[in-house]
Amino acid sequence: MAEHETQSRTTGATVLTLVVVACAAGLADALRRRVRLRRRAHHHVGAESTPAHTHHGTPTVPRQRATGPSVETVRLTEAERDAFAVLVRRLSEGD
Image 1 (cartoon, rainbow, N blue to C red):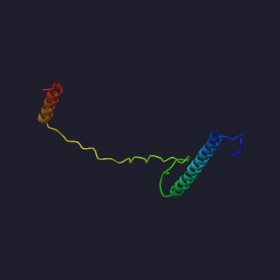
Image 2 (image 1 turned 90 degrees about the vertical axis):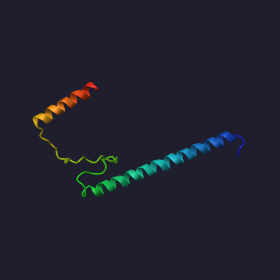
Image 3 (image 1 turned 120 degrees about the vertical axis):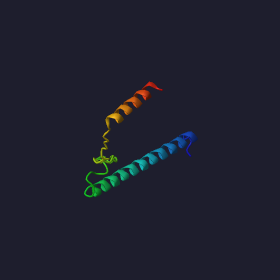
Image 4 (image 1 turned 30 degrees about the horizontal axis):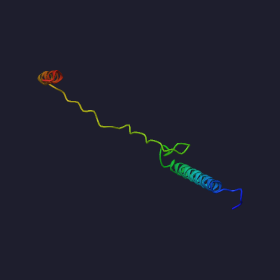
């Protein structure tokens, strides 16, 4: 170690170098994943109606199905409707 170099200067330069290397490795990994996801999305586009990822690589939310449970209806007699109305009135009053 030369006279003008101090222990703290050498340590600081070493830490800074390690941080730069770690950031570069993280950036390279992120770019590699993005390219991999983009390739996977383009590969699956023909198999699905919508791509699994957007053009910038983030996953998409699958579309909801348009079909649902069938609507059920029950025809009530006049007496049943009156009894139901009484029940609703009692429940709304809190008795």
